[in-house]
Image 1 (cartoon, rainbow, N blue to C red):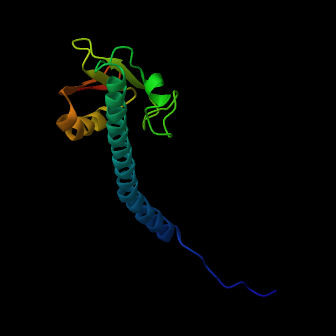
Image 2: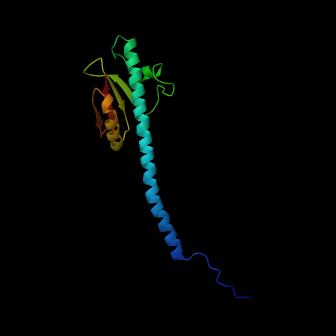
Image 3: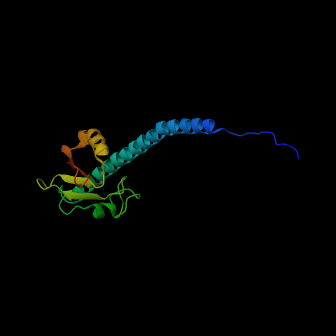
Length: 149
């Protein structure tokens, strides 16, 4: 019989070093991907709020300058772009709601549910310029709301 030579492979130390290197790379890459996803959702939400705002103004123009009776479903049935339907969800898979403001029938409230607090802060910063009142966020219901004229 011939004696087998030690043809080796990887030692346990080499395997551990390889796993540590892979782990470090993943620790760097995964958060970058999550930030990109969050930024994409925020950009989508901003575009959606602006589209809803434009549709709301068209609704008011067709209804004597008042938002009375406005809902997201009614806006989706002819005022919003085609990608919106009555059952459209926001980028965090929550709902959109559109209602006449409780304080004035010449203003409209737009709300999104299931918005994480970090995203709500960024949304508030981005949309304060177009809001009639400071956007608000409820952490208990994860609902972000803005008031538009």
